[in-house]
Image 1 (tube, rainbow, N blue to C red):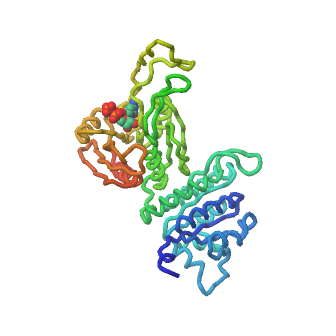
Image 2: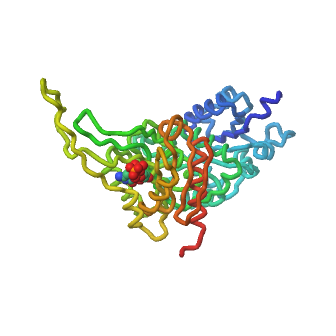
Image 3: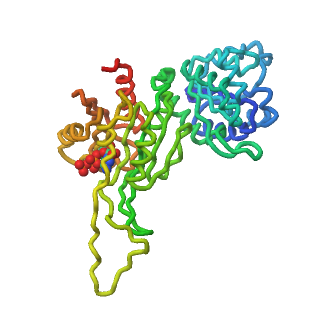
Length: 411
Ligand code: CTP
């Protein structure tokens, strides 16, 4: 094995017996193509859906089910010990139960007991099985121990049924695995477990007529990074997304909105039981006073009518002033072009939030880019600079600051 092979992150893909096993082939392909050394450990039941030959061919590694194969290599211990990440996709109700209770009757459950790396479960099952108190308690146990259990998606299930329990999108599971691998051992600290966080992302569009709107250049990437990282840290996440092209992050409840008024309604509704609200969306401060139900036409020889604007509600100021529950933390964002810190400090005081992430807008910074650089100002006067880097890194810092405040005793 050359150095490069040895340096590849080692991922164990556990596959349990559900029809969604075929979708795990796509997850496996993405993992191998992006430079991960993947060892597939299917349960015996899962081989009814996808056979061993498929897993071996796609991973380039043997795919064993039982602890009795290659016993001299002690696979029931070594595979888990060597892993940088174990992802079980799909995870059936039975597999979650076994993992929660520490049963070890095949290679996958043995691997789960010996792994000391981050573990991600992507459940797939019928709604009744997911909602059963036994499954819910098993999921809570696994999360308490530091595992990332993705909330299943809502949609078409096997047969004619529809509901919660659908296997999350493999692309999103892949993205989550990448984030978890990047966080390494930190993933085991699920410091947002049991918390509900609400994040707004993207930009609002204020319609002038059926074909035109006033909008902004927000891509939504920072808000999506905040949502993805919060989910990886164990939070229940509601993402209120305005006009983004980005795919839904795995395990996150996404509410799509168009205008500032719709965004306000969705954020206030979700904030009612939230522990933290992060307003990363670029909300239009103004909207056209009137909406033309027909397309506004140009008229020969006439100047266009001026567009009259009215103020939109300031959602950040409103949720900061009227906290839906005691101790709720509110985080705002501010994009500034000059006097960045002075304007930021004034805005923090004016809006009344706990934290304000201030970034300078300019070329390759903030809007549209995957990188960002910012200072997080806090109401207690502290300032945390975040160097230029991926939006995920800024998201980590924001959640570090939020988690530290959650840990403080309530005044
Ligand atoms: N925000 C909001 N409701 C609005 C406008 C903005 O909740 N109607 C939130 C944004 O989500 C962000 C913060 O407030 O968290 C940004 O504040 P804002 O005053 O809009 O910033 P700027 O547009 O930079 O403000 P100004 O025009 O005062 O520079």
